[in-house]
Amino acid sequence: MTVLYESHEADWKLLARGKVRDVYEYAPNEMLIVTSDRISAFDVILPTPIPDKGVVLTQISNFWFAQTSHIIANHVIDPEPFSNDEAHTHLAGRAVVVRRADALPVEAIVRGYLTGSGRRDYETTGAVSGIPLPAGLVEASRLPEPVYTPSTKAAIGDHDENISFAGTVDLIGQEMAEKVRDAALDLYAFGAAWALERGIIIADTKFEFGLLDGELILIDEAMTPDSSRFWPADGYEPGESQPSYDKQFVRDYLETLDWDKTAPGPELPDDVVAKTAQKYTEAWRRLTAA
Image (spheres, rainbow, N blue to C red):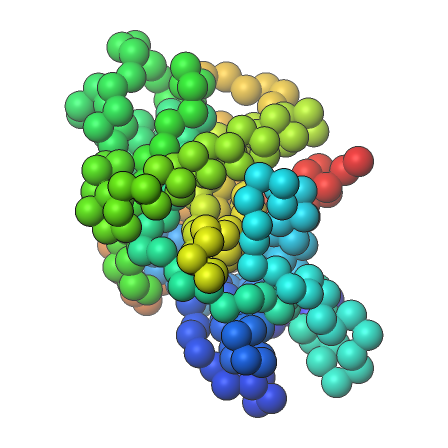
């Protein structure tokens, strides 16, 4: 496997470069998504890549896309387009060919546990995204039931903004907002149960959806260490910060620095890079175990 910090694929036209993924025009109504080894934190792309992170993210997403196709269709056409292509061996494992859909301007976040911005919201208001929760919850408390707490999709360098369900109705209409909410909750319920059987708690996650010929489909990525908080189930203890298999390890390191969380981000030391790569790989191994 090869570290690919930036992808510059001359064979295809670059359509967009995101925080982690680069999107190329592949064929009529088809796109090539290349997942780099870039890592972002606090909505800032850091200058230090994580070795093979793009491969891990792609393979986890491909796994979930296949496992959840009975819940909702997704954009994947070919999950391994370069597995036998000697001219593009650097893309093997980290690139997929997908159908071109119209992305909805909503990030569909589902929370099963209280942490992050959800906990901060709860401590101020007693609710998360306007959804009232029982009194007395603490960091990492399991919620009575998963809650849907959407946000807007921000441009690179900007921060996503949490919004209420009514806010998504304003953006995409009542019927589509309900479809997105219901699909996100169903996907989370399936993924959380699967992961728990393999020793991982999915504390929260985000999904992105698009429209293809008027039908809602799942796009982008699915339940990866980049888009989710993964906690080891053994040793789970409400009331304190949990160890994780995701980029929370990077966030925790960055919180120790005198950094204002604006670009440019700081370089990561070798030990943080190595530990993060190990955590991502362990999540991949556990989630895809039979």
